[in-house]
Length: 179
Image (cartoon, rainbow, N blue to C red; front, side, top):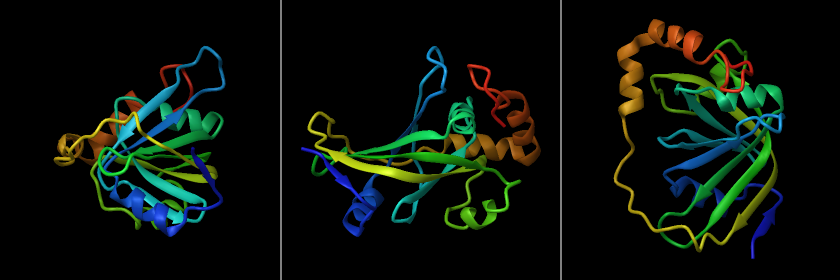
């Protein structure tokens, strides 16, 4: 049976730091809007406090998470154990989008490695921390993180990324404001 936690305690922190990927899910308010679920990798997740987490949002083909957070703030982060003991942990909360234009961005950015293509940092005030068994999650062996996304961003350069954000990350698939 799953447990509910009041805060992100050291044993949970240790387990999260061992995971190589996590999933981010958001949804618009409209009932006919598209729910978004995105896998994330690299060294892009940080626990900032007992109920505060953040992750680097690297440039992608869509801007759904940013658009949904700007509209309603609802977000869930999910970690699954793909090796070791079966476990799933979810962080439910309210997220905010921090871009280079925000005063807190540079301080938050200092918690992460430098990755080409970073377009935002998503900071989440966690209101519910829950785990469950994960018995149905398959076992996988981690090989490595892909570098395709960061290489793509490096080739585009800073100005190319700004252009990409302006043309491809301006609105969500449901027409909500993105970057």
